[in-house]
Length: 161
Image (spheres, rainbow, N blue to C red):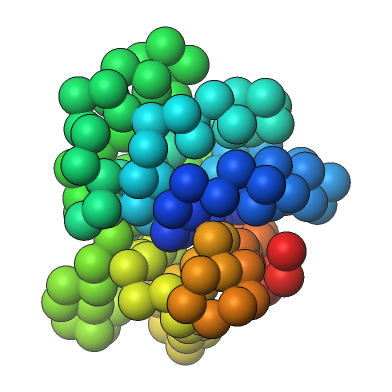
């Protein structure tokens, strides 16, 4: 199973649309969002993209009540991070801010750790796969990105938007 990874969309609807399209073309049916949607209206773009969404709040997600309502409306999943779950038999930790990231990776408790917040691409493949997909918004780097992970072989790749 392939999954998409995205973070820090910061209201960039065009980049959300493009990432959903590219991830679907690559075979992803589920996207993990590591926070910072910013405005709740962004959520509908994932529904239009035909992608299932599992997400955590980011530090810039101030309108949490309406964001939560939009997630319920589209039957997506939204959690307070860090959120631990299993997908296709893989243990995953999804968070916005990389709190205790090194300790979590060394613990061996997870197959995949996804984080955002820094707006910087990070892929660590030794042991636990750790991925920060960078920023989908492209505001700080000028380079909007997302990522694709194959849960079968635990490989990850960055996709430029």
